[in-house]
Amino acid sequence: MSSREVVALSVGGVRFVTRASTLRQFPESRLARMLSEDDQEFKLVNGEFFVDRDGTLFSYILDFLRTLQVSLPADFSDFERLRREAEFYELYPLADLLGQEHLLKPRLEILEVRFFLQETQAFFRVFGSCSTTVERLADQITVFLGQSWSSPFPSQKPLVPLPSERPSHHDLVFQCGTEYAASDQFVARYVSIKPDNRKLINGVNVLGLLVDTLLKDGFRLVSTRTVSSEEKVECYSFERLKRPAGLAVTVSQTPGSSGTAQAKRSHTQKGK
Image 1 (cartoon, rainbow, N blue to C red):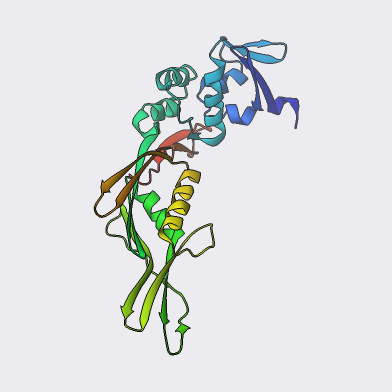
Image 2 (image 1 turned 120 degrees about the horizontal axis):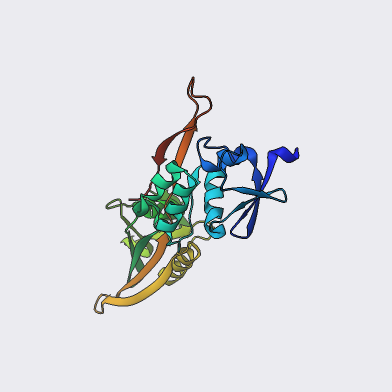
């Protein structure tokens, strides 16, 4: 790679090195014009372009030029300052996306697990504010049904996976344990939660594995309470900050545009 393809910038004292093609992603921007020496505010000092702007915020500007996406940390709050920087560099597609601040901020996601233990059976109901999370959890959880006969000839049928029970897009219900179906037959339900391969029948063990799975997925346990002391219904509440899918632009070339970039907004938001 030749030296002309590599550009060094000192933005507010922070040094950046990138490709010239990255800075020319939007030919009408000031960064693209800087390379053609058409903007006198950017001074070339000892082979580096000096820019008297915020270096920390410029890292997000450069990331956008490289990916054409706006991806910000969950705790980011300087939307207005970053938008002002985008306008300074005349990166109006980025400024436009930053104007949709409500789509870029993380959302608080709530998930609730209700656990009911009755003799040899345990019942679970999972409710989540994000349907995508509940759907993914339903794909992880499998209930296997097994039937056994007692005397005089004990035997057991192979375990059969059951379809997920989804009362709504935001709910998932399942159960485990044993129950008698007839005088000489009982039914057993086992629960498996990926990536764990075990098939558990004890409700307390299943609850422990479910809680551990949620914690590993970024949730935190915020409260536990007894909903009904008579029926022994326990409720576990979880929450996490769900990062947005992000916003992106597509850059296309049109005939006769002399290489002028055109930006089209597009965004994907799942689990609304």
